[in-house]
Length: 216
Image (tube, rainbow, N blue to C red):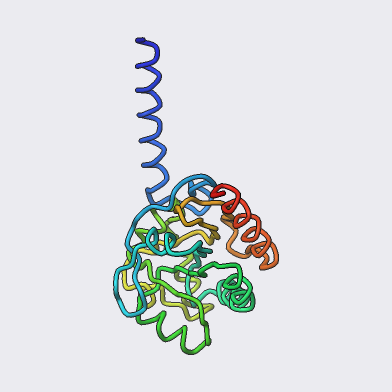
C-alpha cells in the first residue's frame, strides 16, 4: 500500500515538473518540449484578426482541425508554407477538416496579411505567446538574432508582435480530432524544414480513418 502511494506521489510530482518544463519559455528552439500524440489540446484563448478571443477546444469539437504554428509573415519560410497550405486547403476541407494557422503576430497584421495574400483559411493571433507555451513550443530568440532579422529581412519583431521580448514558437503542425486529442504532430526546431504538404494530407487522412474506427 505504501509502495503504491509512494509511486503515485512520484508520478504526480514528475507530471507536474514535466508540465512546468513544457509550458515555460525555452532558452533555445532545441530545448522545447511539445505536446505529443495522444495528449489533449489545452483550452487557452487565441485571438481572431478582429481581436476576439476564441477557444481551440470548441473549434476542434465542431470539426477536426489541422493546426499550424508559424513564426510570422516576416519569415520567408513561413510564407512559403502558408502558400503551400493554401494549395491543399480544399482537399483538407473535403475531408472535413478546418485549417488554422497561428502566429505571434498582432490581430491587425493578420487581417492585412490574409487580404493581401488571398488566404482563405483561418489565421489566428497568439500575440501573448500563451498558446505556444501551452503546446510546449515557445522559446526566446536572442536579441542578436532578432537584430539580424531586422537588418536582413526588414523584420521589426516588436512592430509585428507588440512586445519587447522576442518570444516565438517553433514551427509545428498538429492534427486534432473532435475530442481535442492530437492524432499527429510534426515539430522541428530547424525553422527551414517544414512538413511537406503531401505528407500532411496523408497524415490527416490516416487520422480521420482512425477517428472513424474509434467512434464505430
